[in-house]
Image 1 (cartoon, rainbow, N blue to C red):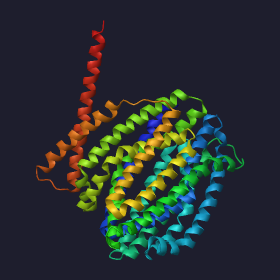
Image 2: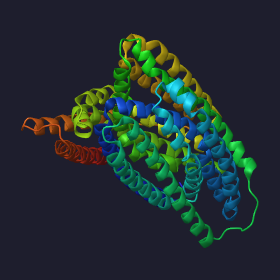
Image 3: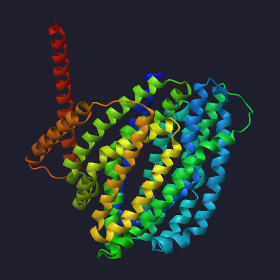
Image 4: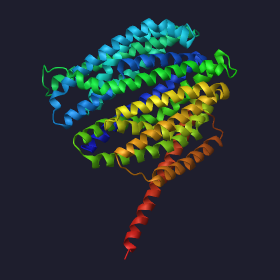
Length: 507
């Protein structure tokens, strides 16, 4: 790793900012749930799935492409020419974002009425179409800042975006959405669009300042060809997977109705799992996502320099740390699922869905990190086919299992397909980069210590009459984490002392 201090400094900064933003986002999700109910959350999740496809069409692959190309250019000593990549990326992304905006406007009514099956979705899709071009601008600039290792600028944008989102969402919902699901959905869509516009404007200002202050070549051309060559495979994968994912989520209420649930019950069940449980499951991932995104330029630069030993060393450490963290997060979420559901969403039902998904956490987190490492070494095409296969199988399983198992079938699909995706990714990664992981130290030991620490904290608090409130959850978390870190430090001390004694007694 070229600059370990810079890597960890940037990672810690992004993690801290991301943790704050994700925490605020979780409680904002709880506020939205209380305002529009489980059925409204389910319908809004379906709307956002369609919007996610439009967003994917407009921005897929461009941020990662800019990051990898800029980092590789710097690795070759051509950092002054990064403006060529930027201009090519802007041309590429503006073309796709403009087309995406037109298509979403034209298809909003057919999709809202015919696919989602609810006319209330149409107005929201119209509003959301206006956010695609600003989102594309932000994606290009965000990828550039990661590539040049100036992630503090992305951190500023992230904080600004979250503050704007919270302020706009609360203001619009309280003013127009109280007691009216249709108006509430439009308010949520408008909050997204205004937030993306604010962030894009701020990103352009940051970029202009950086380019004026830096030592860059002026007036060079636009490198559209290398941007397109790298972005299109990523985009193709994302397009197919996003389309399949949108179709998969759109048919969930229909397939649940064949299990005996009416429309309102189907939307509510979907809202519990997709809109409430998954955000909790993904919450700890913010601690990995920041470092994971930084792995892409690290691997791209190491590969460009031909430094295989660095890639193997980084891969081993990243995989081991992710496994340990994922197991600990899974145990914590499982033990405190009831408190998490009630404290955040005022719903014990949400806690049940959180507990169901908890076992998939380590696999999900490992797959995320493995995917970033594969992209860093240029395995975008392989990742494309894995993602397409994943989405096709997911769609098939949703179609088959939901009428038989109900919403539990969807949980089975999530767990099974995360395992499938991870297995294919890690096998490919091991073929390209040889690395090792100590299962005892990264799986068994941290998982066991976290289990005992969490059970101790839960028994201590609830036996004293505690209830599932935010304060209770914070208290339990503080006790559990304190016990965990104290135990791990003690075990590390004992292991190191034992190893030292063993070395001293050797003949």
